Structures are given as structure tokens and as C-alpha cells.
Length: 216
Image 1 (cartoon, rainbow, N blue to C red):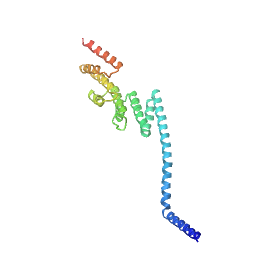
Image 2: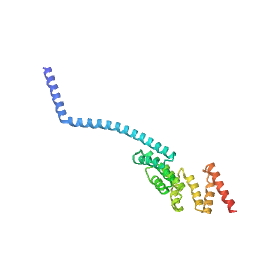
Image 3: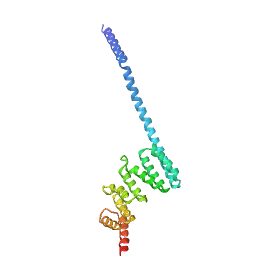
Image 4: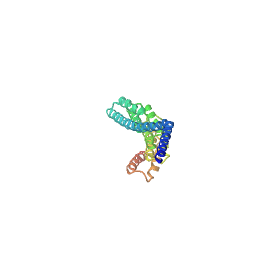
């Protein structure tokens, strides 16, 4: 008798399982399918990302090679592809490459815009943005003193790693625009700083001596 009840109980369980499966199977299958697609999608995305970085790297160094061979237009074309398609790091490096190529072919206005697109991009690390500001001023032979000084000011007024170089570049800028008294005052202030390098101190001392001897 007990066996009969066990059989009936087992059949009821099976019927209940069938009812649950019939009711929820489409949801269970859907969830399982979504999980499968998610895992598969991540795998292919990760593979695609790594391949894309590899392609960006290859294109960047190809652009550098063209730059070294003085094939400037070809280098700009290659770097531009990276700017449109590359991983963020290679986009930034490629913008530096385009700026350098434009400088080499005398397109200073284009170079200035290239560097501006770097230092105004908040998604780029501050060190590279400050470096773009320095290079823009160093190579700019067309803009006014006021414009170039404005580009340097964010570095000069912040605890940037490049602040000392920016301060030295400011002095060179003052000299370039014949603001000699201001340059000498800036040299004096910079020489009093305890964090300047030995090489920088020697350069500043030399400049200071040259202008003091000329003044006599």
C-alpha cells in the first residue's frame, strides 16, 4: 500500500515539475541565452579590443617611421587614421605626431590647433596636456606674446610637474619679445627656488650673465 502512495506522490511531483517547466521554461531559456551571449560577447569584445590596440600601435610606429624619413604628409595621413580609430592613448600620441609633422612642413597655425586639441581635452592626462602647452609655445613663431603667455599660465599657476620648465620657457618668451627687464626679474626669482635642477640653474646663470654684461 505504501508503494502505491509513493508512486502516486512521485507522479504528482513529476506533474508539478512539468507544469513549472511549461510555465517558466521560456524565461529560463531566455536567461540562459542572455548569459551565454554576454559571456561570448565579452570574449569577442576583449579580443577585438586587444587587436584594435595592436593595430593602433602598429599604425602609430608606422607614422613615426614616416616622420623620421621626412615623409611628413604620409605621416599625417597615418596619424590621422589613429586619431579617428585608435585607443585613447594612441589617439593622443598621434595628435602629437600630427603637430610635429605640421611644424616640419611650416604649417604652424595647424600645429597650434593640433596642440590645442590636446590641452583642451579634459579626458587626456594633465601631464600630456601641459606638455602640449609647452611644445605649442616653444614652436610658435606667429602668435603674440599675450596669446603664448596665456597658454603657459595654467602650468605656471599650478603644481604641475612641468612648472619649472614652463617658468624657464616664460623667460625665453620674454627675451624673444624683447621684454628684457621682465626676463631678468623672472630669472632672479627662478634662481631663488630650491627645487630647480643643476642644469637649469646653469642655463639661467648663463642667460643672466649675458644680459648683465650687455647692460654694462
